[in-house]
Every structure is written in structure tokens, then in C-alpha cells.
Amino acid sequence: MGQSSANNDKNGNKMPKGTKKSGMPRMSFLNIISVVILSFLLISGIYAEMSTRSSTTSLVSLSLIAQDIEKGRITSVDVQGNSIIAIYSDKSVKTAMKESDASITESFSRLGVSTAVLASTTITIESPSGFWFWAGELAPFLVPLIILIIFIWILSRQVRGAGMQAMTFGQSKARITLPNDTKQKVTFKDVAGAKEAKQELLEIVDFLRNPKKFIDIGAEIPKGVILMGAPGTGKTLLARAVAGEANVAFFSISGSEFVEMFVGVGASRVRDLFKMAKDAAPSIVFVDEIDAVGRARGSGMGGGNDEREQTLNQILVEMDGFEPNEKVIVMAATNRPDVLDPALLRPGRFDRRVVIDLPDRADREEILKIHSSKKQSAEDVNIQIVAERTPGFSGADLASLMNEAAILAAREERTKIGQFDLIRSIEKVMLGPERKSHVLSVKEKEITAYHEAGHAVVSSVLPYADPVHKISIISRGRAAGYTLKLPFEERKLQSRREFLDDIAVSLGGYVAERMIFGDMTTGASNDLQVATALARDMVTRYGMSEKIGPVALESAQGRVMFGMGVSDREYSEKVAAEIDGEVTRIMTEARTLAEKTLGEHKKAFEAVAKRLVEVETIERDEYEVLVAGQGIVVKKKETV
Image (cartoon, rainbow, N blue to C red; front, top):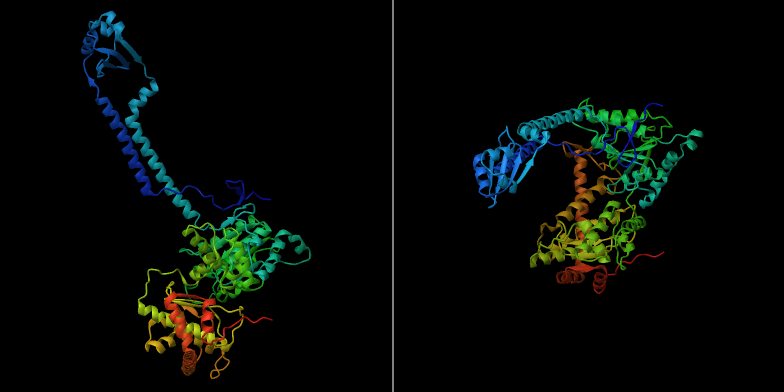
């Protein structure tokens, strides 16, 4: 074995070589100048004070002091070196210089002071030590010299620190979580949902705990594991949980931290990171947002010496350099797996791909239980209802929801979170906070009410649309009002009929404004964008157009160049015109369907709008009673 490559942190934990201990921040040059100036001002103030005090005593001749002693005016005499300080009965002080060739008593006797008077006067002789004498004499010269030396020393340290920083520029900036760090340790108990992902990762944990079982049978554990999923689904949390379950060191770094303005720095940091991980083995190296450096090469951007490509090449080389029993696992996370270089995903590198989906209702309930366990909840809190109302929420969204509920309760001086706080937090996370300062005029309020009522009634009547849970004309975020529609059961697949009904519901507000007011407002702009995008996807991606046929004409995500989207259109102008015609046809048919629906149920439509103007918010139960009274059959959940 070679030399030990570890040191200890302040808690005695073993730290791999190369990890930096946090220390005091270096002083900037401006701070140094400020300290020097303040020091000079402080010394000047001290000398000024001393000189002021010394100036309160007047210097007189020794004979005058002798005369005053003889006359009984002086109560005591202090002798300090060659200075004679006489303190008078009226508390005044006078100073005279002592004769150097005689003692104080001899001097006063020569000047005519009788022995009896001299004996009745208190005479104190203070003999300063040699050190303090010379210190007082040399202080005016030494203090500025010492300050100058300190200033030069600090300045030299700054220069040396800058040089050291340049020398350590290629070192890894990875953050390390040690196995015995209980404060930051995360296990699978802290991760709810993602059952299949955790099952896949348990094999990695088993290998790190007991590698001999795999090596003896000739099995090789995957060298790299890439976690793929939407933002907020818990990729980083799962990676930390693997390290916590295996009780190994965890090195985490973002893909963007490899790339700097200097060519070669990223590759150097990769080498340093993998060296640290091997020294601390068994360990896990986690690269978050690996698509920052792992994008497909050969795009022509940046030339052959592109820093990002150099970094990616070094990562590929380091992963190939691992031995089967190295006991170092590389984990990475991305929400853009489609842009990764194929060399990263081949067997022998990131050969295991773990997909983390958005949580379903049961998973959301488990996630909410974990986040609510650390909060004070009231008795009326029903986590199951909250989970049902949050389809499409990620784990991060649910954490934000619980935090917003706690903030709302604390703001209203309550010690426990209620169900009402959780329901309001759902809307805040989805749409933004209430804009109480955004007060609508009477006319705008009426238009918004009819607009939202149009959405709600069309959604309640059409068979493939989702049921309405809430309608409100209170402004939230950028929306003047909103209609909350949620399915009874979460769907993995959507049909053409469901898409067509969704488009008609989106146009319900637009149609309602035209029907009641004979005009249109800008309030329907977002509805039109959503409906048009869905209609175009039906034609170009899902093959739901009879005229175009089952052809995928556009990919889910185009390329990005110079910050702008670049479409991968591979069809002619004639086909583009046909696509536009099909999109227009779908939108027109949806508008016709919405007009027919609102025309047939105009009484229900107007009743909902008038009620909205009165109360501003209608919950599901009140809404269903209101429309059922106007002849609309309320949708109920099918029971098996």
C-alpha cells in the first residue's frame, strides 16, 4: 500500500484527499486598506488622548515647586523618572524636572525647604522598569513600522493565495457526504413512491454492501446508472438514498461545474473527481444534469476543441478505466435523455437506465405523509383528498404544497395546518398566489364569470371531458379566473375523443363571450394557445387526422440553436398547408360543438355565471347541485 490519501475533518471524519475544508474567507485588497487606515486612526487617537492629558499639567521650575511646598500649598509629590509631579491642595497639578545629580530631598533642601515641612509632605517615587521606559520611548517609531510589516505580510498572502487558486483551478468542486454524516444521510425510507426505481437500485446497494457475492459468480455490476425523469421527481434524492442505504461516501457535482472558460479545466476536474472517489471506495459519484456536458458530439458548435466535448471525452475514458471490483458506482440524472451522446449510454458505461415517472395517486399520498410528518396538522386534514386533487404533481410540487400550507397557517396566527390551507396551497402551486390588489371592474367581473361558466358547463356536458371541481373568478397569477377540472382516475393514455372534448372545453370561454356580449376579449388567449397546440399535436404527432393519416411529422422536442427553437420539419410545403387546414378544421368543429352545448344548456350556463358574480367561488358540491337543477346529468365515478 502507498501513502494514505485521507485526512480528517473537524468532526474526525475521514475525508478523501483533495476535499477542501471550509475556512475563513480571504480579505480583499480594499478590506486590507480599510484595516490599515483604521489602525492609523486608532493609534492617532490614542496619542492625541495621551497628549491631551499631558497638556493639562503645566511645566514650572523646580524652585517654584520648592516655594509652594514650604508654604504648605502642595499635599503630595510624585517622582516618575526625571519628572516631578506636584499635586496642590486645590487639586491642580504642576510638573517640574528633577535635578539629575541629586536626590529629590537633596534638591528640595538646597532650595530652602525645611526638613519638618518636607517630612509632612507625601513623596512617592516611581521607578519605571527598563522595558516600559524603552517601550515608551520607542513606541512612536515602532508602532508604524509594525503596522507596515503586517500590511506587507497580508498583501503577500493575497498574492500567494491567488497563485494557489490558479494552481488548484483544475481540482474538483464535488460536495462529499460521508457515511457517518447522520444529518445529511438519506435512505429509501425517506423516499416515497418510485417502487420500480427503488427495486432497480437495490441491486446497486447490494453490490456495494457485499461485492464478493457478485464477483464470485462472475457477475459485473453496472458501472453507471442514469436516472431519467421529469424535473422534481426525486432523481437526486434517490441517488443520495442509494449511498445512504449502502453506507458509502457520496460525491455530488453538477454537470455545469465541470465547464469553465479555460480549455482543459473540465477534464482536469473529472480526473480529480474520479481519483477522490477511488481513494474513498466504496463510493458513489453522482453527476446531476449530466446533459450539460453529455450532449451528443459532432454538432459543429465550438469546433474540435470544444471544452464541453473534452470534458465528455474524459468522463468516457474514466468510466472505461474502472475495474469490475473497483467498488465505485457512477450515477447521473437528466430530464433530457434524448440529447445525450450515444457513447454515454452504451453497455459498459451508463448501461442501466432507471426511469422515474410522476407519482400516481397512491404515491402522492405516501409523499404527502412524509412531508406532513414534520408539520403540525389539524384533525380535519385528509391527505387522500389532497392526493386526488393533485394529478401531475411531482414530489417537489408536493413538498412545496405542504410548505405553502404551513406558511398560510403561520401567517394567520394558527399553530396547526388545516384542510383549508392545503386546498388553497394546491391552487397557489398550480396557478400562483391570489392577486387581491387586482380588482376587476363590474363589467370585467361579469365577462370573467360568463367565460368560466362556459368552460364549466361544456366540461360537464361532454361525455369525455373531466368533471369540474371548482370555479373561481378570483385572480391568481396571470389568470383572471380559472376552472379546476380533475379526472376521476389518472390516465396513462388519452383517446382522440378525449382530445376533441378537451379542445371544445378550452373554447367554451371564447364561445361564451361571443354568445353573451357579441364580442371577444384577450381573456381567451391562453385557451386558444393550448387548444391550438393540442390540435397540432393530434395531427403531426399522434396520427389522429383522417386526411394526413398515421404519420408522425414532428418530434416531441426540436433542436435549439442560439437560444431559439429550430424545428426538424421534414415535410413539404404542401403537407404543411394540409396540416394547417386540419388544425383549423379541428378548432372549427370544436367551436361548433361548444356553441351547440352552451345553446342547449343556456339556462344552466347563465345560472352558474350569475352565481359566480355573487360569490366569486363555487366548489364542486354547490356546482353540481346548481347544474343538476337545470337538467344536466352530473358525472359520477364508475364503481366496479
